[in-house]
Length: 270
Image (spheres, rainbow, N blue to C red):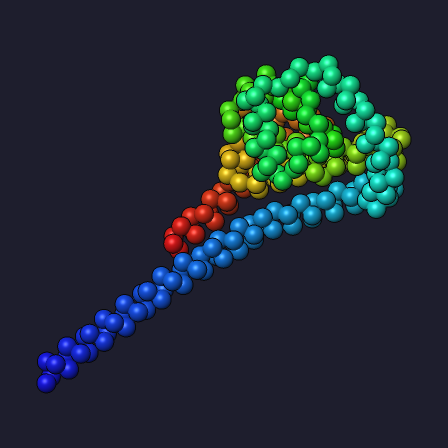
């Protein structure tokens, strides 16, 4: 009898353990996507908040030294947007007539990046140009590509270079910058010029960050691109409109580190 009771006790214990294990597996299977999504969202939100804080500081500086508020700048931007759109589209039409066509390989690359950034290919013009050291550039309506220069970089860097420019397009950085410059005609003052440069730095940092937040290939591409720039131009290379290359590398590596910490934690839970 004692042996029988022991058998039944062991059987019930085993059944309970098995039931708990299956329940745990079911819970993990169903909850992990939510955990992964939540962690990824928190990671993205963290950098979005940092960008908002940086933007507020920049506009406080601009207003202090120029008297122009962000609201005034955006209002001016909107009032000129239709006129600028007509002008740039007309110019683009003429340039496309005279431009060499991009290779199928580059077209395919551009299509992938446009899809990643949810941009309709029909909404922008893609124009080959000679970048004079810049593999790509953008205004609000156009993606300019120096194909020879672009293809000289590793593939992951090509993704980032194009993604960075597409963020400029999505953020309407070019036309907002033009609006601010219209409102500040006198740029000879050192403090005023510094304030204007701060907007350029903000736009470049935002384009770097939001492009990287699209995923690993853009993060790895940014590191690859900036390290090549660092070797070519020097660690402290800086022009008025862009942050130091060393600062851009540091940002890229921080995002890479945080992004992979999230992935490691999720894999451990699985």
